[in-house]
Figure (spheres, rainbow, N blue to C red):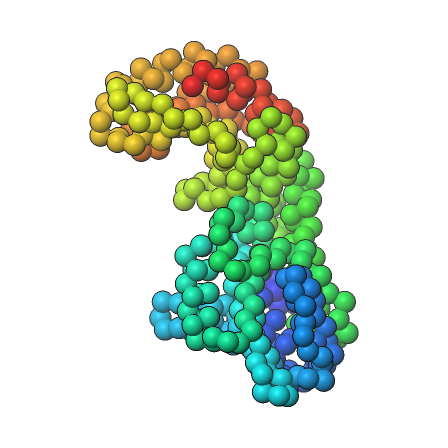
Length: 346
């Protein structure tokens, strides 16, 4: 039998909510109540909470996929635990595989669900199952406890369930861990960084999730440099690794600008944000570029000029890195050298 996760697609959140719902819901008789309770105990522990009931206290477990508050707001999974004394406890779970959690969604979910379940124990959890686990989370999670892939695996692994749905899903979690941890090792056998067929055969989702995992390893190396705070997120058209402390305010002809540094895919970019783009002409920006080119072209790692574009967000200069040929450790050292040389002149 084919692995159903590979057939349907690991990246789809419904795959994961479907398995968890099947596993925990009381209607699934092939999973013992002891295994269901083991999962609940592990879930409470992973979220830093104490479980207040025993397996014999459980009357029924109901799982609701895509729990709806109308058209605009849906919760990926709600687990309702009803005890013999008719007391109810809830787990509200939002699933993210490769997308980045949205703070507004978490806030609205908490607000709406808590209003409808006042006085009842409700636990809120954010499951990060894919590249989302390495992206930068919102500062305020609004009561949600974020659990990474490793946390989730520890909650559900080692159960006495002999069913292909469970086995395929657990194996899929293990394979995703391997994709995250081993991505740098896989790079050496690729034709180039855009070898789509090669990476997809290894199970990677191209291109954002793959790049996020590479950024994850680069970020770990950058932590050993002077510039150690970096954020991974989506820049709409590009996966981004941004230097958190690198924003520096300045002005051109009384127009406020901000310099900042980030990787867009595999290019380190010196960029500017222009507060009022209409107030700066192309000639004004060309003059700025000219003064910066003199500095940027004298770095240890060669870079190149960009087109003289205008707008709100503008890339001034790029340094390309071939991650097939150069290690993330060496990239991090070059980044430190480049920023040290250029940033003090901004």
